[in-house]
Image (cartoon, rainbow, N blue to C red; front, top):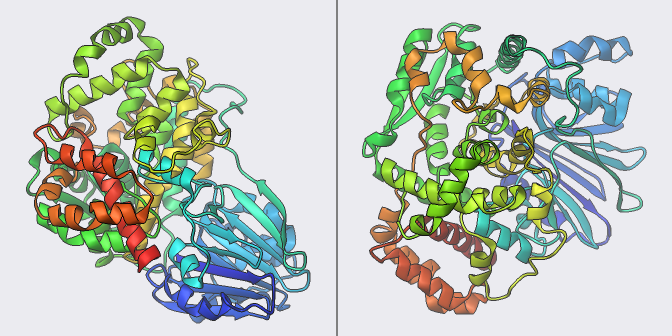
Length: 632
């Protein structure tokens, strides 16, 4: 796991960005604390920060060149099946000098160019420079596990693992108003969009060829698409599908256990991480597992379930018991690491889990991806009911006016049910695409527009909503929703959260559920295998039932709610009122509508704050980012 940075000077006489290259590369130090390397000529600079995982010797250092000295690679990620392809590379006459996956990948590219990407089972962002042809090849993994941002203007072309390193180069910073509107709704900005004009995220499963002589992208293409509309040659029986998924996931876990440094597994007590940990424990002795519990919030503490799994599979289990003050103590660490507005508050939990886990291991397995692929979210249950239970849906529509008058909250089971019913009733009135976008959002577009001083054209054909809901048709098979979730929620929120917070602590996290062979198979199955009247993630539960304690299956999905509202009214009150959301600062900033922000603050401190804390947190994250990167 590493961080990469590249810069092409379109005008070789202008070295304004080049002079900042080393400082910009150092911004990636937490991604790669072990060493750094730079390749440069008069036009091209390639930088690499290394977190040594496979072949920790200097032979695995980057930038890495081939034996002919023609090609240079910088690679961030893991190529789990590289040993399988070693013999192919050697059969073509190439002699490998290291035991690293990077070297195998470099020679595969030399042999097959972009076709080599089809061979990679893993996650990555990479760049390969051909000195002779003066071309640059850039690519990103199938699901966007590893980030890759691209900047381009009339003088330079640059790319990096993080926005902060691009900004440290000295690029021009202008806020993209459409992205800001999207952020206010979702609390994150999904690929390919970014908060800055002239910066975009390379779409997952894509590559670029850049001609350094012509100073232009000559080809940009998706090498991978979710096979949602490419059904298996024959639909397997449910029993066949269970057995196949079991085999594929176990193989995926085995592949992801290759490491020359200590490896463990996150174990939350939920089904997904429990399955991964149970499978991993079968292939190593004394697997280390890690979970966090919440002293002050017993309703959200799942550690007893994690301990049941750990006991059954004899793992070396460590529980980090947190108080609300522990969460508050890392708040500014999290805010300071975020270099593009990202306001999923559970990032605080992931930050602490990653920090504590890193004290024991360098690599951790996680259960990310299962909810999106197999229908694990509450919105999936609601969508299934709307598509399959018209009488229940119609009844809720009738009670929608009454539900809208009742305040709900995530902080109690009763309040959370009211909140969910209200959202369900409102969603039932909309078509499938609009409903999907609304359920992914904290606030609707009209509300988001009202917060901005300068309104944006919401009918723009390039609106992110249109891009991400295009696949949501509302048919009987719900794989359309799961596809949208992989493209939006998984790539824009969940994977970003884990990548940011783990890399802030120099911890590599691997996601067995996102093995592309397993994902491809899962999307070839009918959604009825995943969700029905009684079950969500049905086939995962049934396939791995014997591996887990029965108690794991007798509980509902329970997420932890960070106590933001309490903080906003106590410890963070001055930070909000006097600093980030101060009327004078809002006026000078000239981005937000002062009166609308003032109304939000009044609601926050009223007797009926509702769900206001998520909006306030989104604004706080943006304002902190703005002050640090625009005014700092």
